[in-house]
Image (cartoon, rainbow, N blue to C red):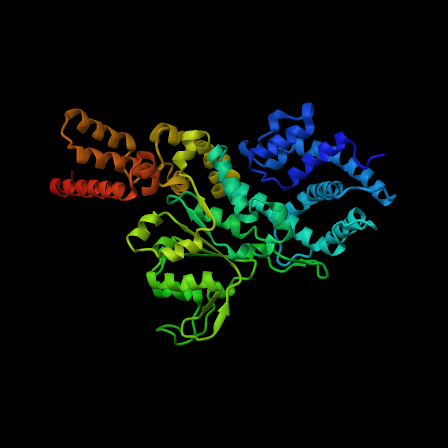
Length: 516
C-alpha cells in the first residue's frame, strides 16, 4: 500500500499551497477551487471583496479542513505503524497539520487580539503543545521537533494578528483595496511564508518600510497594521509573549514638531542637553523593543541634519541620546511615510538620496479615495458605515444613513474627496454634530466649468492650457510622479506647469481683490 494515493496526494499538495499563500491574492481562490472541485461555493469565494468580517464567509476553508482532518489522522496512524513515506510526502503531512492547527486555534487567538489583556497568560498553549506532540512526535521521522511548538504558536498568533489588522485597517471592496491588503501582507511576511517561518522572522526588523500616498489616504493605518503584526517570541514556561503587541507601535509626526523636538522624541536626551531638558528622557528609538516599530510620519519634512542621524540608525542600528556619548542599540523596525514626491525632493536637495536608498527596500503606495471610488463606487458607503460605527457606536447605522443622504443631496456622487478618507471622516463628524458638511474648497464641477469656458472662448495660451491641465490632474491624484506618469511627462516639467498655474491663479485673485 502506498503512503498516499494519487487523489489524496493531489489534494494535500493544494492544502500545502494554501498554507503559505497570501490570503488576499486571487491565488487563494484558485487553490480552494482546485481542492474542492464541484463542492466549491462560488458565492462566498472572494470574501476579500465582500466588505464585512471574512470569518463569516470561510465556508470553502471549512470544507477543506473537514476533508483534511480525517485524511491526516489516517496518515498519522500509518506513520506510527512504521509505513515508509518519502520526504515530499512528509512535507505534505507537516503542511496539512499546520493548516489544521491554525484554523483550529484561529477563533481563540481572535478573541485575545480583539480584547487584549495586560500581560495575559495563554494557558491553552498546554493543550496546543499536547496536540503538537501527537502530530509530530513520531519516532523515526524527521518532522518538526517538540521545541518548535512555541515558535509555531508565535507564528500562528502573528498570522492571525496580521490578517485581522490588515482587513480592519484597509476598508473597501475594490480590487485596489484588495491589492493594498496583499502588499501589506507581503511587507510583514515577504512573498515566501515558508522561508519566513524557517528564518526570516528573525530579521524582518532590519528592513525599513516606506509608505507613499496622498494626505488622508490611510498611511498611518497601514503602518499600524504592520507595526502591530510583527513576530513576538513566546515563552512556553511562563506561557506569555515577550511583549504585548498593542504596546509596540511608536508613531511620531515629523511635520508637527520643530527639528530640536523631533531629535528629542526620537533619540531622547540627557539632562541639560538643551534649555528645558530638566531630566534624562528616553526617546522612541530607545523605548522601542525588538518586536516594536517606530513610525515616522511625513518623513519628507524631516530636517536635513536629522536625516543624517536617522541614516546612521538604519545603517548601523545604533544612536546616541542628545547630550550623551553613550552608544545605544536600536532593535526595532522603522516604518516611514510621506505624501511628498520624494524623487523630486531628492533632485532639489531636500531629501538625502542615501537615506532614501536605505528606506526603499520595501515600498507601499496607498491609493486616494477617488482612485478606489473610480473602480468600486460602493467603497464610499463602506467607509461611511465603518466610520459612523466607530464614532457613534450604537447610533452608527442611523448616522450613516444621514451622512449618505447629505452626500447624495448636497455634495453629489461626483465629489472627488480631495482630503481622502480623512476628509470623509470629518464629514461624518460634522454631520453628527451640526447635521451638515461644507467642504472648504470650490467644488470640482465649478472649477471644470471655468476651465471649459476659457477653452471655448479661446483666451488661453498653450502654456496656460498646459499649466491648467497639469494642475487639474495633479489636484486629483495628489502626486507629481503620478501626474507625470499619466501625462507621459517628466516630473520636473509637471512641477513647473503646476507651480506656474498656481502662481497665475494667485496673481489673478490679488488683482481682483479679496472679495471677488
